[in-house]
Image: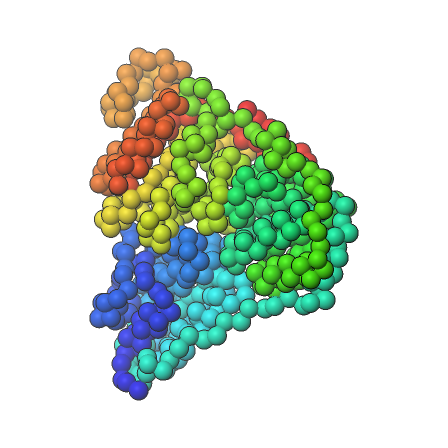
Amino acid sequence: MAKMTTMAAAVRILQSEGVQYIFGIPGAGILPFYRALKDLGTIKHMVTRHEESAVHMADGYARAIGKVGVCAATSGPGASNFVTGLYTAQVDSIPILAITGQNVRAQLDREAFQAVNIAEIVKSVTKKSYCVKDAAMVPWVFREAFRIMREGRPGPVLIDLPLDVQKEEIEYDPETDTQLPVFSAPPNQKQVKKAVDMLLAAEKPVMLLGGGVIVADACKEFVALAESLQIPVVTSYMGKSGIPWNHPLMAGHVGIQCNTRSGNQVFLDSTLVLAVGARFNDRHTGDVKVYKGNRKFIHVDVDPGQLGKNIMPDLGICADAKLTLRALLDEVKRRNVKPPPVKLDIAQIRSRMERKTNYDNIPIKPQRVFKEINEFFDEETVFVTCIGLNQIWSGQLQKVSKPRHYLDCGGAGPLGWDMPAAIGAKIARPQKLVVDVVGDFGFQFCMDALPVAVMYKVPFVIVVLNNGYLGLIRQAEKYSFDMDFEVQIWYDSLRAIQADQVPKAVAAGARRSVTVDRTAEAAENEGIGFDFVKFAEACGAMGERVSDPKEMKGAFQRAVDSGMPYVVDIVMERDTDCSMGVSIDAIREFE
């Protein structure tokens, strides 16, 4: 046994648990932790410009490689700025350890400076939260946190550390302290046999790949089971990338927003659904009566709270996804089941129902952007995207072939998540090209992350879909409220003012010279708003604006070749609507 501070013990535990990076901001309430981090010297740290970016970086890191992401912040507002990121991680099953400083124990519950009860605040958005008031408990709490984050349905944990607890000395032996065992729940064999019985008896079975399959690293087993029984596959949005987009059995995505027409159609034609690691959330199911129909459901999920929450299954299996899929495969092999004759040409259905992307319009149609993305970037590229029409078009149109190569925040949808998450993903997988597909409004939420990428020389590509709108809300206002109110973010906003009223100072500040006597149509197509390229340059990054569809591939190539954070600002048609609906059988299509 050796005598050391609690934080010296804590950082040794982090090291032994495999932590290589921490994203955060040092502050007065957590400096003993940072002192121990500096003394250990083996864990790298990236100082962010905002705590929300720090937790999103840890999130992107965790999603990219399936390991625990770690972030750190000081007490009070530093800690409370973690809440959105913890909520995002909780609903998407991402293991994140948030370490926060706290005022001394004597000042707790006294409204002292920066002494918010963060452990209580985050209870509903974490798997577990601690405020450690006994110094001797620090090693155990850190070890238990890693077990909790990894076991069952993964998720975030917060450890709040009062300043005096951080400074205390304890007896701790790092040579004998080890990781706690993590239990993986196996399936019940009777349920496995019944599931196979149901699959073999079904007239039109389909397999639904949810995000939990990716989280469990069970994509290989999932695809193998589908192939062994020749069952068509659909995915939820969170399951995108779990099976190659062009696999012969891959029908597409099911949903009322992030969907493919073929995915919804094949699902609607099914009589039995084997859903693995799916939450059946509202953007996936839409009208539950339509979604459920007369079909039967087998639902596999490691979280017992998911079984029956939104869809009551005919058979629920509460177990680890990978172990369950392996057991199903073993049962199929034990029965010597021969693959049935192929009833559907899934590839033909997928191709026939694919949405149009080959537009040559100027201003650029958003669908054309994804045609260029699909053609230019290869299957090794890691894509990151976030909430908005940019995300929905991405979900509908992007073609992804490998698990953990498409990272998205599906459950919480916090604007701005994608840029810091892309940085975290690039740190996790430095040999991969990382591309952030973001809307013009979302870019401005966590753009504080860009100078962090420049400072630490983290190259990635940011593709901005720029239509000068809060696009998703504009469309909702248009069809549900008959208005276009407070959703325009180009400064001239020519729907409200005339071209000859554009201030000369604003016009002179545009990326490309814009004269005040231009026509309203030309001005609206160009737009005068936030200059993403100048912002990138101000941060030390690079960028360019694109207004012709033929220029996109060249811009992408220059972005990749730069070896730097690079912004490609694509000025798009402003009013393009995105296909969506209230139920999966009533999607309103737009071109």
